[in-house]
Length: 391
Picture (spheres, one colour):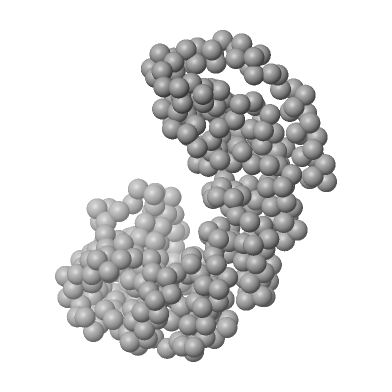
């Protein structure tokens, strides 16, 4: 169906397209060409003047960008680029998505719809990708259209499908990181072998790829060093925390890691306490240094909790400061001010408990529950502007 559609698009665009002479009769294009000639009389620029005009008038390029792109992309009639744009339009791409795609990957205008574009659309569709999925993938990573279907896309997808045992999961992984489809199958196999050889179970390998697909394009030697580092920290390869630690460490540079350690040290935590908290709950090191500092300030300075208590119970670090921690901290202070809770109160459940249970456990049983709930809702509604200065 898509091949027939493409043929009709190409034929239609050819029928609609006029000759180069009639194209140049367009006043705006003539104006553009005169301007190009006035600013640069180089024979090469004049030779590519049609391409420059097309890029400016059809694709929204600036003159400077169009001149630069025309050195790599050249056409003398609108037939081919028009047919390419028509394919994207008929496949559901919006005008802005098409123009953004062309700006990011101008060479796509030289694609052959029947042999380069439509087979890839059909492949994605055959694997269960929706039209919107395909649009999102190509819009975010247009280079995927340049990959060989037989030599790259199909082998990469098949390898991931065998490993993850589900087309649906491969779709999720691809949507998160389209670059994974450019992964060399042999390299992906080596990454998996390293994990297996170190005792990571199959289900956790799948979890790692699902959480961080870019792991499959890692440099092999760097990845081996990372596995060794995580193991030396005290993580057991058979546990899910091992996977979590890998994703956290890969998300930051060594200098960023050190910066976060410095923040925790300033709040009185030792190296051993920080590492123990990280091994217990890897997300303890996931937040930015600024967010870590703000969270510690909230608990230690505002609520009076000990930093050592937070290190021993690190799960609170995973919650949003604005949407969870600060609103509930304000409610806790409210309860303390009303004498409904002791100032020495310490409970991770106050921050860890899901929303519906939180209200039932910590609010509803108080005689002043209506007032407390109103106060809490006000803080939640203003969570986007709430910060530590609220206290």
